[in-house]
Length: 141
Image (cartoon, rainbow, N blue to C red; front, side):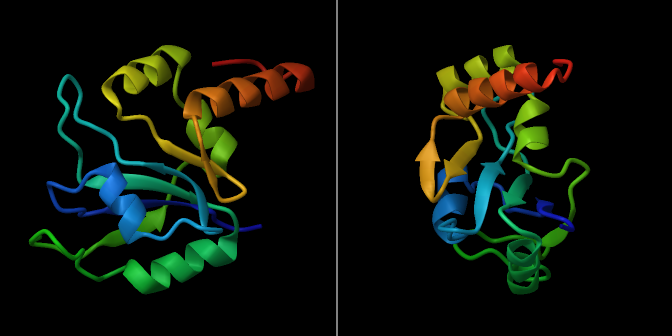
């Protein structure tokens, strides 16, 4: 299997998650992208979490973007990409609580989630994953 989740650092201030989605083609590549916001502020951070559908897709992305500047906004540093601590869609989405998901939804800052190339509401996916875990007998957060 290998690494599927990456953390991308040095994203210039000003980028929105939607701009990253258009910059980083997601069709068939990744199922989770999250550009977090600063606590107690609606200002984005300079890093994003991306989970790819395969190790090969993660390697392709790394080869294309690591060490490069993002277009459209000036930045003092190139992108730095490394393996994420959490691997897989289930772990990345599961690190969030239901309250966090609902709060993010209110402010329009939820992670972008995809299934078979279609964007799906992260709340629905979160509940589906939670239900699957209950069926498997996995303890909840």
